[in-house]
Amino acid sequence: QVQLVESGGGLVQPGGSLRLSCAASGSISSISGMAWYRQAPGKQRELVASIISGGRTNYVDSVKGRFSISRDYAKNTVYLQMNSLKPEDTAVYFCNAVNYRGIGFWGQGTQVTVSS
Image (cartoon, rainbow, N blue to C red; front, side):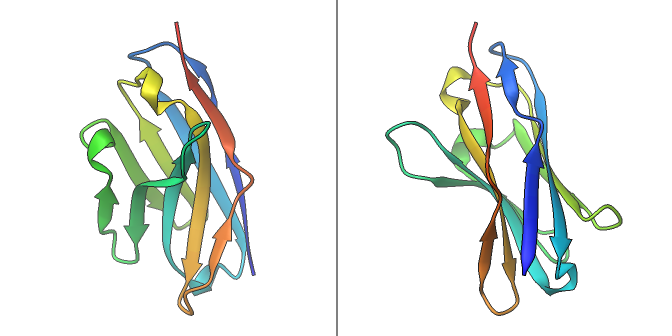
């Protein structure tokens, strides 16, 4: 089992920045990849960014050049640095981890609101 706890969400003005953190605990060595998803009201949950063992990253087109995902193995934490935030980035952001058996784990989510 893997437990995930997100933090760092909040209210920010358009053009501002936030850094989300996701602390993992439990069977850390079993994690093959981690990702951030988001879900806006009335919309489906979408993959925002992912990082796999070896450091390869992937981003949805709408955040390329603005968001950056990274993983600190020493702290068992994955980060999502979000710059140049737009109102359409408003959503609940969820941390996800997948183990080598393909089983996924989710955090509780953290609200990000971009508004003036």
